[in-house]
Amino acid sequence: MDGRVFRRRDLATLALVLTATPIAHGAAYDTAPPAQAATRIQVAEPRRVPGLPDIVNDTPAPAARSAEASPVARSRPLLLAQNALPSQDATRTAERSLGTTQDKVMEHAAPNVTPAAVPVRQDKSTWYVGGAVGRGGLDTGYQHTLQTLFNTGATQVWVTPRAEDVMWKAYAGYRISPRWSVEGGYWDFGKTGYSADISSPVTTTVDRQFRGYGLGADAVFWLPVTKAFTGFTKLGGVQVAAKASAATPGGGLSPLPEQSSSTFNLHWGLGGEYALTPNLAVRMEYETINRAGDNNKFGTADIILWTLGGAYKF
Image (cartoon, rainbow, N blue to C red; front, side, top):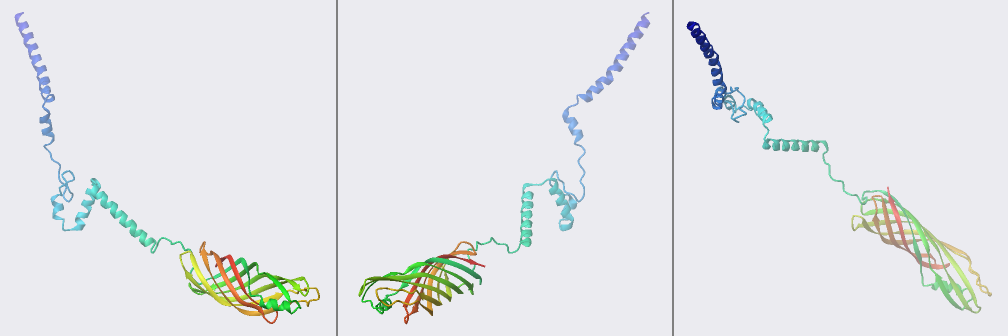
């Protein structure tokens, strides 16, 4: 009895010892200090690869140091290092290189490209046409007119001139150079005339009209003042065809016949032109035709003309 009890107790004690031993041994591993575990993990260091830099420590490998003299050998490792860890300096360098490359491409793609200047006027040789309308008249002392009236038998005469009328012209020209051009045109001088009050030997009134046309040419000198405004002066000649109407004073005085004349007269003028576009301009001009008419018939007068118009350049 006592022997069996002893054996049972011995067997229980032995089983308890055997069961507790591995649990305590496993607990020893589980409760190991963190420092010891870390020490065990860091024992194995990363192996260096010959020819490639150490990216972690930013220190080139021994093989890379020996190959510094060869640009071919180190070009690929450097490229891999930059791709692996791009720095701010490397990014700026790449941006500058890209900008320089783009500038060079643009220079080769579009050479000699400059901002377009606003061409206000055309100074090259070119054809142009124009037209103008204005007012004008005759500048005369009417001495020949008075003599003509006295030839009718009148002895006391009072003359009232109608020397102004609407006139117009059309012209065409060719620009030889920026400063010179030749220009030809047609003029319509409108109607002018006079009325005369005769008081002796009879009291009556007489009215006479004049009509004139011109065809001529000029040499024009241009003087640029600004980019848009150019002054000019011209000199040439005009063939003037003039006609005087018939007039009958009445009261027994001799009638005045219809008369005409055609003379070549000196023509000059000056003015200014303002360019609205390279092809379109506004033009203002003053011009005079000297001694138009015929002194052997109805007298002569200077024709004065102010016009405003436009010109179109081809």
